[in-house]
Length: 296
Image 1 (cartoon, rainbow, N blue to C red):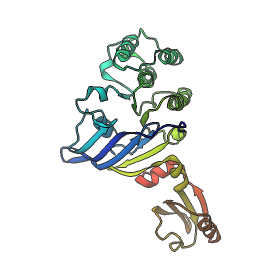
Image 2: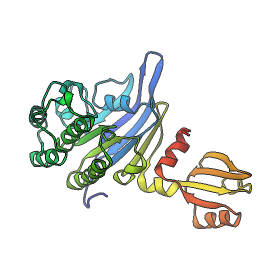
Image 3: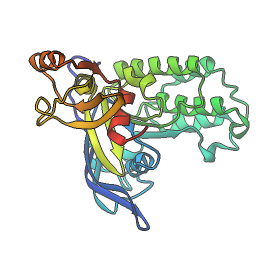
Image 4: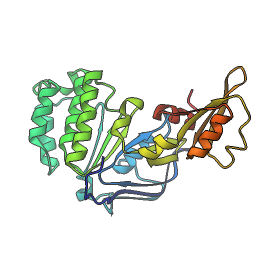
């Protein structure tokens, strides 16, 4: 939920960006704008371009064409901007031989708005042994170190790339609460990739779906929940769906059709569908993702 009085400043602006590796175009002429105070679900099947996009945002990769601005400026070789973005994965190789106490000390010097109180609270919560060696820690503990850095960094832009998979269900639930608390306390742009789509729905304010390097959906979560519909029935209803954004049609039983759409249905339209014997249900985010990407 947005805080009252927050100005929705554009912090990430991507215009006509493409990126190829050899003959494979991984990011294909995409355009996106992301705002302060929003938490974005960046969703896509493996190979869709999610991690490449994150690497473009942090200038680890440079686009073949197009432009990327962060907080109103070009990010490449711009230390002021790059120090205001934090990107964490579930394992960070450069940390391998370091102890968490050293990792956190280095991070606190790099990030000017480092939250030391939160660091101590999270270190205790995740039961981090700060004198153990990162490379020898369990997957869950390594994940927790990355989460602590991201949450404590205080950066305007925070990117978490599939970082939650190493946590058990109890820790993941607490993490989701922390993400929402942080968004209430500070104005940040959070971009999260995850395969735990339905589990994290309440965290997101906006959804971006990538497929084959292209953006096939960008919308706020309220619209996503309102427009994602699943229609089940037997009759031909093509006349009722004329002009609607139909995602898929399939038979799920003897003469029973299942039609998935991403569009608005008014009360009168729903009533007419029901009169034709159709059941109208909302799709959850996981179902929408599968319908849009063809994932079975």
